[in-house]
Length: 199
Image 1 (tube, one colour):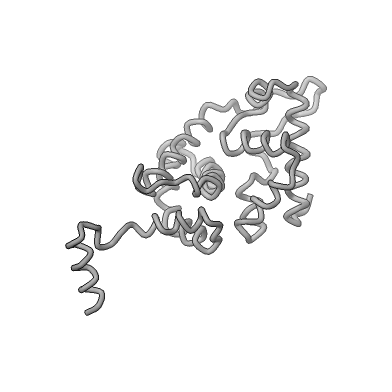
Image 2 (tube, one colour):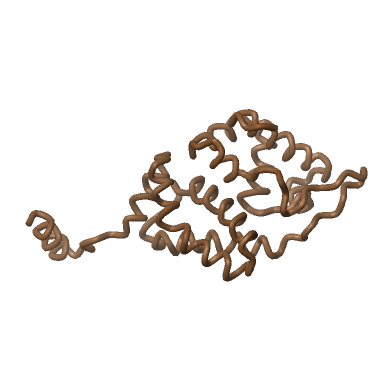
């Protein structure tokens, strides 16, 4: 009875009777609620995975890109504004843009000038979401990122959140390619150490 009365009042006031639960979950994620992030993942991952597969046409790529997308969703959840876009629209935009970036990236990158091979796109190194999932705590990655030097944190954020390649990073940061690679490599090692993961 009470719920029907509430629905009637809600309809009379012009507010939707059953707002999108993802709005609340994104809001909770923006406040650092790890349980809400897990519920958001369960509620949205199947649809977003479908979007990624349709664009990339490879399931392995879609899985990898989607992992990075959820790190981006967690990181940018405080910026989400329900009045500008529905939750699925906002998250789908993140997935679509990341997929398009993925398709534009060269695969694999050329070897370093000193002869050592650069990381492959299908790298065995754990990306941010893999680190996040391995740590079992969604907030752990954010806390560990905060411990990095500013230049390492910036390089990793640009590489994994914005999908920049090493050469694009070097151009963007106006630094030598080898320097940027060192920042990313050392930053990832420090993240793994902070998260208690094997090197």
